[in-house]
Image (cartoon, rainbow, N blue to C red; front, top):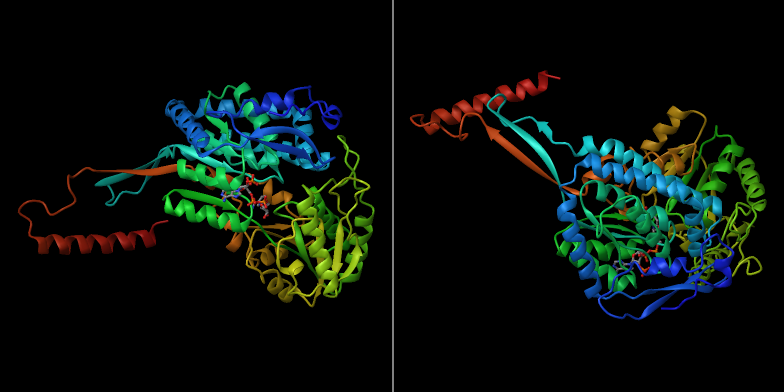
Length: 528
Ligand code: NDP
């Protein structure tokens, strides 16, 4: 395996020499495997290598996970929660090293990487505090009051496969793994091949927190090989990534009759109402559209502004955007970092070039900045965008946003909903009740009022996921935990079989049961 972590760029971080090799050694393969180079977008140089796992390696990882899970499900939920809490503490304690790895792998600005650090301990404490009650046996109404009862128990599904993308490699490797582990499952995680080291660093910290061996494993390699191999072995798959890959994951999960959650792409609208403060909305637009250089599934890519506020909003938004500083430092200086790689940079540039060729106007940005970094791209604002153009309809996943004037709230809602996606939206108005009323009209899994995405994402008690092409299932909240358990109903009868007692005619029993059903229906209407 290439010994490249002594490369110049790694020396600029606080990481100890050999740290990335140490992390790569966590990946178990049954034989020598070809290796995949991992490059940093900061300088486009190699920083390490990982094995290209095969089907056999994936099967081996799942087998080890399955054997560890047998003991883990016997451990009390409170004990599991304590380990998860210790892990959250370690993430905070070792944050500088984790931030360096995130920045090395993604090229994002440090203050954007911090959002990932903040997220994981919060998710740990939410599930550690609430998991035991969410997973506790629950008494439900029986078939016949007093004569029977019902109890629901929740058993872990077994081994959960987590397939995660490169854009938030720390958060998205862990946010689905934490509740899976807490519910008594083992996890085998397949991170994006461009960002494997942060997932490996988290595996190290889980072990340091006391998670028994084998319960959290990493398999690395190309998604098209390792992903399907993983889905064939596990009992549930939690996938985060693009919509087209999500469809193939869902097809395979369907064939294998396993459940899955799919957190996919978006074309997120932001709606600025006539009474909104243009400065506040512009600050929100900058944060939403350009966090992580726009490589954020929740980022607004379409902004609909009431035409009475349009000019003021555009002035404030363009002004604030032009003040943003692009840069690549392992420190808190620059506002925006790099795109992930050259292919993505070319794709983003093509979206902008096509839009401009179709008549769009560039109000800010619109060009690559190789003088700052090999894959840096200026934050870009477009207007006069053809509503049928690619940039208007497809997810750009870069620092590119289009602004449209609208004649009022009805048009804003109609245009916000004119998409196959439905991940995240935001509404801007000082009248929060009105904002919430408008939010109900927008077809998205999360709608934030007066914030672009953070209040929705960070509400870990509330479910998060997509409508339409943005996905299936929910992470966060009780929903995000219950997806990883099989519900079993145990129903008991105090009067023996619910059938006609001996000596009672079927006709009499049928009339008795019909009468009882009527009484029960009345009672359920009257009783609270
Ligand atoms: P991809 O769908 O290409 O990749 C996501 C993950 O799936 C990677 O680990 C990839 O591996 C793996 N993969 C690739 N092919 C397969 C396959 N056939 N079966 C199983 N797994 C496979 O996504 P992107 O890299 O394009 O990530 C960006 C996308 O993710 C955007 O659309 C974004 O909106 C979405 N996203 C959604 C979020 C949400 O919460 N809704 C959050 C963040 C991102 P590899 O790359 O190593 O080949």
